[in-house]
Image (cartoon, rainbow, N blue to C red; front, top):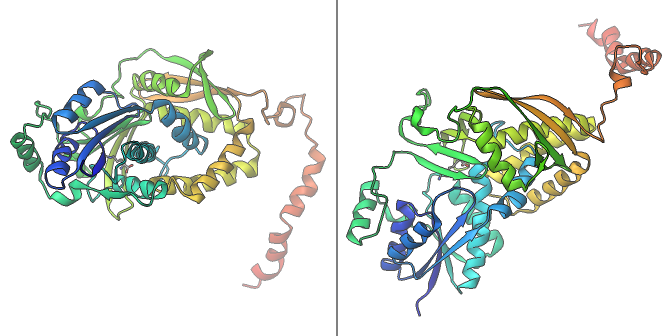
Length: 396
Ligand code: ARG
């Protein structure tokens, strides 16, 4: 029996060629592992393709709920948007795949794991740092970084070994998709001035013009129901992708800073993610005390960097998540969204534990705010700058 390797397998050209390449050039028995994180596609076809490419075994893992509950929800708690815009779609799926690479390696007694990432991206960082954090003794192989094939070379290699690949002429885009969204790179979009071609969009094509309302219910930060119907988090995300996406909501076009030092033009579709972050962060406006809300937002940007940079399995990310979990204790209530072509917006919010106090806020006769307290408060608040104004500022 030869030495075994577990390959994170997508069914695409590169990982299909990698199955054969790891066997032929590196002498491994290759186990292909496909993880369902909600990217869609037929996993039976993927299984057959891996076997046809020469895998000695195929593992198909349904990780949709695990991905939603253990990776996406912590990001939602933090309202996580990398560089204020990107909901960390691919950054969140790599650690769950890394975790299953390690588990599958144990199951098959493999000495190595492999992935199909190039040397220019973030995903190699996330896979490798993730695997090292979970099992520092596993050897990691990155065929695409080693073989130096162009796309044409890969197709040639596939032909030579009769590896089945998608026959149709694929679009020149690099696409990564899961429950939390879809990332589209390459092609014309490499010019940051050029508008993304219309055919890159799949999740956010307008099909609905009739305005609609939608109520999302949260319990301790977790989305639990849509329009009064209880559902799992994974289900809610999938439904929101459809419903918000059908209004064309959820597109992002940005130039982001990769961990490896490259600025790259990225186009994303994330209707469910952006809709949930919009609603969740809105509910926090009435359920979080001011200092907690402000500090949480500061720490969230650190959470985003760590997750983006492949440090999901790290003591700081775990500690920040403990903090975020704690903040969610009273993030319970409902948010009412309005849907219209190209947009989703908050129309209202309510909570049984709301900190919004009508009698404090109102300008009507119910007003219970102690106006006389304000005078002394404001005077003391400004006392420092008043003193400065009377002495140093004047002498300038
Ligand atoms: N730029 C995004 C990130 O680093 C998306 C990466 C997409 N990955 C891909 N293989 N197309 O998280």
